[in-house]
Image: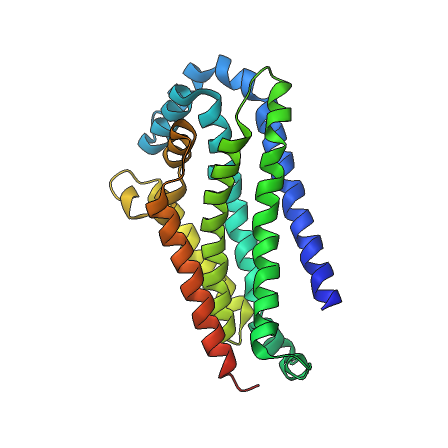
Length: 254
Protein backbone atom coordinates (compact mmCIF):
# COMPACT_ATOMS: atom_id res chain seq x y z
CA UNK A 1 0.00 0.00 0.00
CA UNK A 2 2.99 2.30 0.56
CA UNK A 3 3.93 2.26 -3.13
CA UNK A 4 0.34 2.90 -4.19
CA UNK A 5 0.01 5.77 -1.70
CA UNK A 6 3.20 7.43 -2.96
CA UNK A 7 2.01 7.06 -6.54
CA UNK A 8 -1.30 8.74 -5.69
CA UNK A 9 0.47 11.56 -3.85
CA UNK A 10 2.78 12.32 -6.77
CA UNK A 11 -0.05 12.23 -9.32
CA UNK A 12 -2.16 14.50 -7.14
CA UNK A 13 0.70 16.96 -6.65
CA UNK A 14 1.32 17.06 -10.40
CA UNK A 15 -2.36 17.79 -11.05
CA UNK A 16 -2.35 20.52 -8.37
CA UNK A 17 0.76 22.20 -9.80
CA UNK A 18 -0.80 22.40 -13.26
CA UNK A 19 -4.08 23.79 -11.90
CA UNK A 20 -2.24 26.36 -9.79
CA UNK A 21 -0.10 27.47 -12.70
CA UNK A 22 -3.15 27.92 -14.92
CA UNK A 23 -5.22 29.93 -12.43
CA UNK A 24 -2.23 32.11 -11.47
CA UNK A 25 -1.58 32.94 -15.13
CA UNK A 26 -5.30 33.62 -15.72
CA UNK A 27 -5.54 36.02 -12.78
CA UNK A 28 -2.40 37.86 -13.83
CA UNK A 29 -4.04 38.32 -17.26
CA UNK A 30 -7.33 39.59 -15.78
CA UNK A 31 -6.62 43.35 -16.08
CA UNK A 32 -5.73 42.93 -19.76
CA UNK A 33 -8.84 40.80 -20.32
CA UNK A 34 -11.11 43.36 -18.67
CA UNK A 35 -9.53 46.18 -20.69
CA UNK A 36 -9.89 44.39 -24.03
CA UNK A 37 -13.21 42.60 -23.51
CA UNK A 38 -14.78 44.35 -26.49
CA UNK A 39 -12.09 43.15 -28.87
CA UNK A 40 -12.26 39.62 -27.43
CA UNK A 41 -16.02 39.55 -27.91
CA UNK A 42 -15.62 40.61 -31.55
CA UNK A 43 -13.12 37.83 -32.18
CA UNK A 44 -15.49 35.31 -30.59
CA UNK A 45 -18.55 36.46 -32.54
CA UNK A 46 -18.29 33.84 -35.36
CA UNK A 47 -18.89 31.07 -32.80
CA UNK A 48 -22.23 31.66 -31.02
CA UNK A 49 -21.42 29.58 -27.92
CA UNK A 50 -18.02 31.22 -27.53
CA UNK A 51 -19.58 34.66 -27.96
CA UNK A 52 -22.18 33.88 -25.29
CA UNK A 53 -19.41 32.62 -23.02
CA UNK A 54 -17.47 35.86 -23.34
CA UNK A 55 -20.68 37.83 -22.72
CA UNK A 56 -21.24 35.82 -19.54
CA UNK A 57 -17.72 36.62 -18.40
CA UNK A 58 -18.28 40.32 -19.10
CA UNK A 59 -21.57 40.40 -17.22
CA UNK A 60 -20.37 38.32 -14.28
CA UNK A 61 -17.18 40.24 -13.63
CA UNK A 62 -14.32 38.72 -11.68
CA UNK A 63 -16.45 35.86 -10.25
CA UNK A 64 -17.46 34.69 -13.72
CA UNK A 65 -13.91 35.10 -14.99
CA UNK A 66 -12.35 33.07 -12.17
CA UNK A 67 -14.94 30.30 -12.23
CA UNK A 68 -14.73 30.15 -16.01
CA UNK A 69 -10.94 29.92 -16.01
CA UNK A 70 -10.48 27.64 -13.02
CA UNK A 71 -13.52 25.36 -12.88
CA UNK A 72 -14.96 25.35 -16.39
CA UNK A 73 -11.68 25.41 -18.34
CA UNK A 74 -8.98 23.87 -16.15
CA UNK A 75 -10.92 21.51 -13.89
CA UNK A 76 -13.32 20.29 -16.58
CA UNK A 77 -10.65 19.55 -19.17
CA UNK A 78 -7.52 18.59 -17.26
CA UNK A 79 -9.55 17.27 -14.35
CA UNK A 80 -11.57 14.94 -16.56
CA UNK A 81 -8.38 13.54 -18.09
CA UNK A 82 -6.80 13.15 -14.65
CA UNK A 83 -9.90 11.39 -13.30
CA UNK A 84 -9.79 8.86 -16.13
CA UNK A 85 -6.05 8.23 -15.85
CA UNK A 86 -6.21 7.88 -12.05
CA UNK A 87 -9.05 5.34 -12.21
CA UNK A 88 -8.36 3.26 -15.28
CA UNK A 89 -5.55 1.19 -13.79
CA UNK A 90 -7.26 0.46 -10.48
CA UNK A 91 -8.14 -3.14 -11.39
CA UNK A 92 -7.73 -3.47 -15.15
CA UNK A 93 -4.15 -2.27 -14.78
CA UNK A 94 -3.39 -5.09 -12.34
CA UNK A 95 -4.90 -7.58 -14.76
CA UNK A 96 -2.95 -6.16 -17.69
CA UNK A 97 0.33 -6.36 -15.74
CA UNK A 98 -0.46 -9.87 -14.50
CA UNK A 99 -0.31 -8.79 -10.84
CA UNK A 100 -3.97 -9.18 -9.87
CA UNK A 101 -3.38 -12.52 -8.11
CA UNK A 102 -0.57 -11.01 -6.03
CA UNK A 103 -2.78 -8.07 -5.14
CA UNK A 104 -5.62 -10.35 -4.06
CA UNK A 105 -3.21 -12.53 -2.04
CA UNK A 106 -2.87 -9.79 0.56
CA UNK A 107 -4.33 -10.71 3.97
CA UNK A 108 -7.18 -8.19 3.70
CA UNK A 109 -10.68 -8.40 2.28
CA UNK A 110 -11.55 -7.50 -1.29
CA UNK A 111 -13.87 -4.80 0.05
CA UNK A 112 -10.96 -3.09 1.81
CA UNK A 113 -8.61 -3.49 -1.15
CA UNK A 114 -11.02 -1.92 -3.59
CA UNK A 115 -12.30 0.75 -1.20
CA UNK A 116 -8.80 1.96 -0.32
CA UNK A 117 -7.84 2.24 -3.97
CA UNK A 118 -11.14 3.99 -4.77
CA UNK A 119 -10.76 6.53 -1.97
CA UNK A 120 -7.11 7.23 -2.77
CA UNK A 121 -8.11 8.03 -6.34
CA UNK A 122 -11.02 10.21 -5.25
CA UNK A 123 -8.68 12.18 -2.99
CA UNK A 124 -6.13 12.56 -5.80
CA UNK A 125 -8.82 14.11 -8.01
CA UNK A 126 -10.63 16.29 -5.46
CA UNK A 127 -7.94 17.64 -3.11
CA UNK A 128 -6.03 19.58 -5.81
CA UNK A 129 -9.26 21.36 -6.78
CA UNK A 130 -9.85 22.53 -3.19
CA UNK A 131 -6.18 23.33 -2.55
CA UNK A 132 -5.76 25.48 -5.65
CA UNK A 133 -9.11 27.21 -5.06
CA UNK A 134 -7.94 28.19 -1.58
CA UNK A 135 -5.10 30.21 -3.14
CA UNK A 136 -7.42 32.28 -5.32
CA UNK A 137 -8.23 35.07 -2.79
CA UNK A 138 -4.51 35.75 -2.33
CA UNK A 139 -3.90 35.68 -6.08
CA UNK A 140 -6.81 38.07 -6.63
CA UNK A 141 -5.35 40.51 -4.09
CA UNK A 142 -2.44 41.03 -6.48
CA UNK A 143 -4.85 42.55 -9.02
CA UNK A 144 -7.01 44.38 -6.44
CA UNK A 145 -9.95 41.97 -6.68
CA UNK A 146 -11.69 39.74 -4.14
CA UNK A 147 -13.86 36.64 -3.90
CA UNK A 148 -15.37 34.93 -0.89
CA UNK A 149 -13.59 31.75 0.22
CA UNK A 150 -16.96 30.17 1.01
CA UNK A 151 -18.12 30.64 -2.59
CA UNK A 152 -14.90 29.12 -3.90
CA UNK A 153 -15.26 26.10 -1.62
CA UNK A 154 -18.84 25.55 -2.78
CA UNK A 155 -17.71 25.74 -6.40
CA UNK A 156 -14.87 23.35 -5.59
CA UNK A 157 -17.28 20.82 -4.11
CA UNK A 158 -19.53 21.05 -7.17
CA UNK A 159 -16.61 20.68 -9.60
CA UNK A 160 -15.08 17.85 -7.57
CA UNK A 161 -18.30 15.85 -7.52
CA UNK A 162 -18.46 16.06 -11.31
CA UNK A 163 -14.87 14.89 -11.67
CA UNK A 164 -15.52 12.17 -9.09
CA UNK A 165 -18.44 10.95 -11.20
CA UNK A 166 -16.09 10.59 -14.18
CA UNK A 167 -13.58 8.83 -11.93
CA UNK A 168 -16.25 6.49 -10.53
CA UNK A 169 -17.54 5.54 -13.98
CA UNK A 170 -14.00 4.77 -15.16
CA UNK A 171 -13.31 2.89 -11.92
CA UNK A 172 -16.38 0.72 -12.53
CA UNK A 173 -15.21 -0.15 -16.05
CA UNK A 174 -11.76 -0.91 -14.65
CA UNK A 175 -13.25 -3.29 -12.08
CA UNK A 176 -14.95 -5.20 -14.89
CA UNK A 177 -12.35 -4.93 -17.67
CA UNK A 178 -8.88 -6.11 -18.57
CA UNK A 179 -7.60 -3.50 -21.06
CA UNK A 180 -6.88 -0.16 -19.34
CA UNK A 181 -5.87 1.57 -22.56
CA UNK A 182 -9.15 0.73 -24.28
CA UNK A 183 -11.14 1.81 -21.23
CA UNK A 184 -9.27 5.11 -21.02
CA UNK A 185 -9.74 5.80 -24.73
CA UNK A 186 -13.46 5.05 -24.52
CA UNK A 187 -14.11 7.34 -21.55
CA UNK A 188 -11.91 10.14 -22.90
CA UNK A 189 -13.68 9.92 -26.27
CA UNK A 190 -17.04 10.18 -24.47
CA UNK A 191 -15.81 13.20 -22.49
CA UNK A 192 -14.47 14.93 -25.61
CA UNK A 193 -17.72 14.22 -27.45
CA UNK A 194 -19.74 15.69 -24.60
CA UNK A 195 -17.57 18.81 -24.53
CA UNK A 196 -17.81 19.13 -28.31
CA UNK A 197 -21.60 19.11 -28.32
CA UNK A 198 -21.57 21.66 -25.49
CA UNK A 199 -20.00 24.10 -27.94
CA UNK A 200 -22.81 23.58 -30.50
CA UNK A 201 -25.64 25.96 -29.64
CA UNK A 202 -28.48 23.81 -31.02
CA UNK A 203 -27.57 20.71 -28.99
CA UNK A 204 -25.64 22.15 -26.07
CA UNK A 205 -28.33 21.18 -23.57
CA UNK A 206 -27.64 17.50 -24.27
CA UNK A 207 -24.10 17.86 -22.96
CA UNK A 208 -23.22 16.75 -19.44
CA UNK A 209 -20.88 19.73 -19.23
CA UNK A 210 -23.97 21.91 -18.84
CA UNK A 211 -23.87 20.69 -15.23
CA UNK A 212 -20.54 22.45 -14.71
CA UNK A 213 -20.55 25.42 -17.07
CA UNK A 214 -19.86 29.05 -16.25
CA UNK A 215 -23.52 29.87 -15.66
CA UNK A 216 -23.78 27.10 -13.07
CA UNK A 217 -20.79 28.37 -11.09
CA UNK A 218 -21.90 32.00 -11.35
CA UNK A 219 -25.27 30.93 -9.93
CA UNK A 220 -23.51 29.25 -7.02
CA UNK A 221 -21.53 32.40 -6.23
CA UNK A 222 -24.47 34.76 -6.67
CA UNK A 223 -26.89 32.72 -4.53
CA UNK A 224 -24.24 31.58 -2.04
CA UNK A 225 -25.55 28.05 -2.18
CA UNK A 226 -25.21 24.81 -4.10
CA UNK A 227 -27.77 23.51 -6.56
CA UNK A 228 -28.76 20.44 -4.57
CA UNK A 229 -30.67 18.84 -7.43
CA UNK A 230 -27.41 18.60 -9.40
CA UNK A 231 -25.25 17.81 -6.36
CA UNK A 232 -27.61 15.05 -5.26
CA UNK A 233 -27.54 13.49 -8.72
CA UNK A 234 -23.73 13.53 -8.83
CA UNK A 235 -23.49 11.95 -5.38
CA UNK A 236 -25.91 9.24 -6.48
CA UNK A 237 -23.82 8.49 -9.59
CA UNK A 238 -20.69 8.10 -7.45
CA UNK A 239 -22.39 5.79 -4.97
CA UNK A 240 -23.99 3.63 -7.67
CA UNK A 241 -20.73 3.27 -9.61
CA UNK A 242 -18.76 2.41 -6.46
CA UNK A 243 -21.37 -0.15 -5.40
CA UNK A 244 -21.43 -1.73 -8.86
CA UNK A 245 -17.60 -1.83 -8.96
CA UNK A 246 -17.52 -3.56 -5.57
CA UNK A 247 -20.14 -6.08 -6.70
CA UNK A 248 -18.15 -6.87 -9.85
CA UNK A 249 -14.81 -7.05 -8.03
CA UNK A 250 -16.03 -9.44 -5.34
CA UNK A 251 -17.11 -11.90 -8.04
CA UNK A 252 -14.08 -11.48 -10.20
CA UNK A 253 -11.83 -14.46 -10.85
CA UNK A 254 -8.09 -13.58 -11.28
